[in-house]
Image 1 (tube, rainbow, N blue to C red):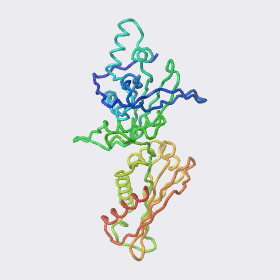
Image 2 (cartoon, one colour):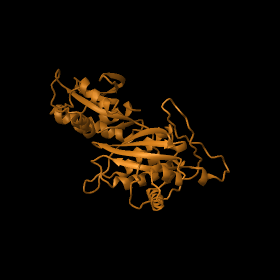
Image 3 (cartoon, one colour):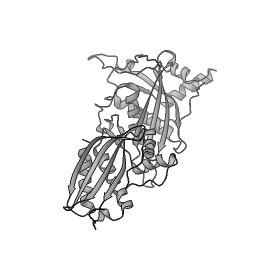
Image 4 (cartoon, helix red, strand yellow):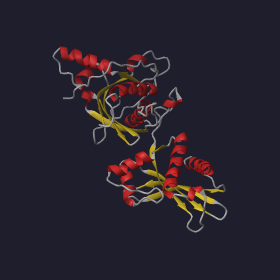
Length: 352
């Protein structure tokens, strides 16, 4: 029996009902079903009654995430489904109201019974977790007759916002992660391509790690600032890459150093060095949590100045790397600001 969680009374009004959505069973060998979408024919008058109704049956969250995430997930799901312009969302308030009526009538308020009462075409079971600064939302959807067909999707997004006290602001990141999970659940990578607001035009994105930045002046000794203190400056260089990639990237989801290092700590690995290429064990650990793409960099002193090279690579399960693309740019000024400007431009070009 699946119990319905209580929630704080909260509901957002959806204003995005324009298209028709139907649930189409698409059985595989694992008896799974995708939730598909279809456009509403021009002039149809059935917009409000034929959209698929989605109900959250359960929200589970990791121990390091506050309980307020339940209320926030309610609001975020309303926004995410509304931005797709293809669903009707049943709020937790409405769900719990029906659950209470069933209980008062001595009917067990299970996810199934409440969903049936609300005529929900799909029940969503959500799990929200956090690793470093990465938020992970997994949606397990039950659809079809008696909700016996299932499909799941995972969405990732970086926790980029803090309030004045340094507390994490989950709301915008939660919406983004739910949107990416919905792309998987529906099997539609373009689900949000035509969202009314650009901030909601979210698409699936591959996690992208920044694994190392070598600073090489062994053949030509240098007093340039970038070559002084490899531990500090290699970390600085990786931060430059992350920040520049985060400004424009949609195909990839840049992962910060805190999150990357959290993977190492979680797996019991410590003492990694940003100025050396990671070994196969370290790369395998990144792959094991779904980080399959990476960038490593090098700044090498030359007679004319320095050469900065960046390599985009794919991580394989065994920790080996497959080169996808490599670019190099010259650096003629011996300042950190010039290094940052050149490196930022180069990583943006690399990811185009």
